[in-house]
Image (cartoon, rainbow, N blue to C red; front, side, top):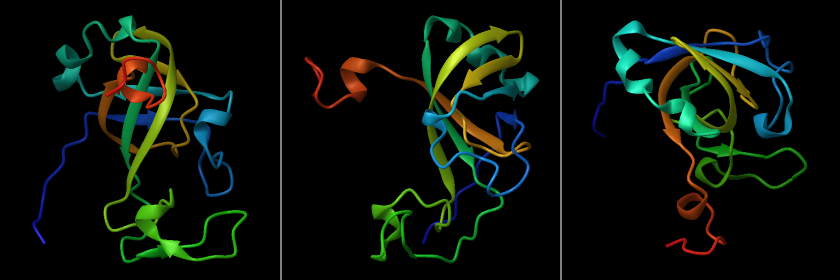
Length: 140
């Protein structure tokens, strides 16, 4: 397998410190968190306020990387990890659709993020309904 290197563009500041505190699915939570953007990436968030919803990709730094199967909550059947949303996976990337509440300087206030305080942010991408919702008119 090919090795890759990632650089954090920021860090999550949230009230979630330990397993069991973070919601199972961030989208279902009203809790607000802050994403502190690395000053070297400041130019990259220009115009981000134009997008009310964002995909936030995080590095789930506390997750195991040696797991290829998982049993999702509410299921008794074990699945391949790529057929689940388990944080325990070979490359523990988190993907969360959040609401952008406020963008001030290098701080993005978001709602619906399920990451622990201190979680590295790998990337942020705008959500576009016509591209990201398979059932919407105009979706590819």
